[in-house]
Length: 284
Length: 210
Image (cartoon, rainbow over all chains, first blue to last red; front, top):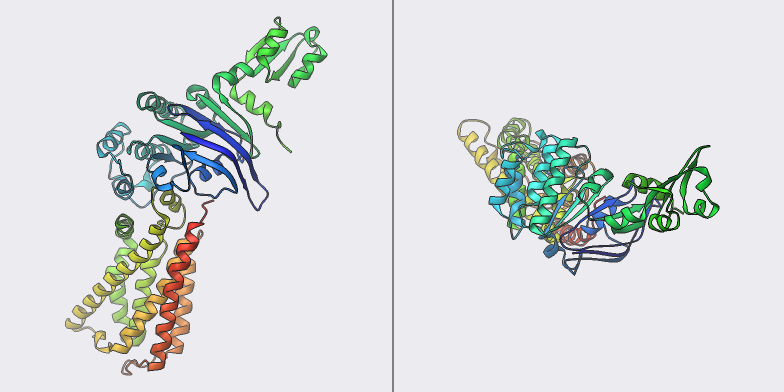
C-alpha cells in the first residue's frame, strides 16, 4: 500500500531526513511518531510530493509517487495538521471546489458524514472550530472511496472526547472498508488505542518501524531490588535509576531479560516510555 | 482545467470586497477621475481591474496552495488555468465596466468612452497583457504577502508608463501611439506573455511547499 525505501532529504538549515524506510500493508493503521521537529511532517509532505526527495523511493499502491501522482492522489484522503481550506468559503462551496477532482466522489457518503458530524453546508470555514475543521477534513477525505488515508497530527489541539470519536471512526473505517491509515502524531495514547504498526523517527532518523505487539513484547520497564542488579543486567538497561532499596530501567530486550532473569518484574513500557528512552539512540 | 477555472470564479464571487469593487467602485472612480484626466481614468481603471483579477486570494499562494497540490491535479493545469481564469475575469470585468461607463454616460455623467480610439485600445490591451504576465507568476510563486508585491508592481507600472506615455495630460488630447511605439509594445507584449507562461510552467513543476 505504502512503501518508503531509503528516503533522504537534506535542508539548507542542516536538518536531514536520513534513510527512512517503512512499509504499510493494506488494511492496517500505522502510527508515525516522533518528537516535534523529528521530521514527521516533512516525511508526509514528501510522500504527498509537496516536497522533493533527494534520494530514495516511495511507492504507493505499487506505483512511483511522482510518476503516477494524479492516479495515486485520486485514491488518497489527506488531513493535515492545520486547515488548508479557503477560509472565506462555506462548506458547500469548498466541497464544490474539491469534489470534481476526484473520480470516485460520493455525494451521498459526504452528506452522511456532514449529518454525522453535525456540519451545516452553509457554515463558513473561517467560523468553524478546530474540531469542526478536522471533522470537515475527515468528511472530505472519506467521501471519495480513498484506499489510503494520510493524516498529519489530526488530533492535536482536539479535546479528549472528540479525539476518541475520531479514533473510533478511523478504527471502524479500517476494519469495515479495508483501507489503510498512515497517521502521524505525538499523542502516543492515540496510537496505543488504534495503531497496528508504529514507526518512530527522531532527529530525521528512523528508530524503528515494527508491529505494536512486537514493540510491546520487546520493550519493557525492569524493576527489582539492588541485589538483583548484576553487571550484565546493568549493561542491558537504559536510563537506569537506582535507590537504596530498588532499581528501575528501560530495556529493548524485554523478552530476553524475562527468560534470563525470571525473578525480575518487567512491566509493559508505554509508547511514551519507549520514545523517551530511545530518543538518543541514533543521534549523532 | 474547467474545475480550476470554476474554483477561481467561486473564490472571486465569495470575496465580497473584490466583487463589489469590480461591480461598483471601479466605474464610479473612473468617472470621478475623468473630470480631471480622462487618460488617467482609463489607465487607473484598467490597472485596478488587473489588480483585482490577479490579486492574492488563497488559491495558489499561501496555505491553500497545499490543498491544491494535494488534490489529483496536473500541475501544468494549475498554471494554465491561473492564466486563463485571470484573462477571463479581466475580459468580463472590462466589458462590464465599459457597459456601466456607457450607461453612466447616457445618464448624463462624464462620458469618458468618447475618449477611446484604436491607439488607446491597443495600448491598454498590450499593457494589460504585460501586467498579467508579471502579476500571475507573482501570485503563483509568492509565499508571503503577495498582495503587497502586486501593489508594488502595479504602482511602479503606473508611475513609469504614465510618465513615459504622457497620459496625465489634458482630457482633450487624444491618445496617440506611433507605429514604432506599436512595434515595441507588440514585441514586449509577446516576449512577456511567452516568458511568463513558459517560465511559470517550468518553475511550478519544482515548487515545494514548506
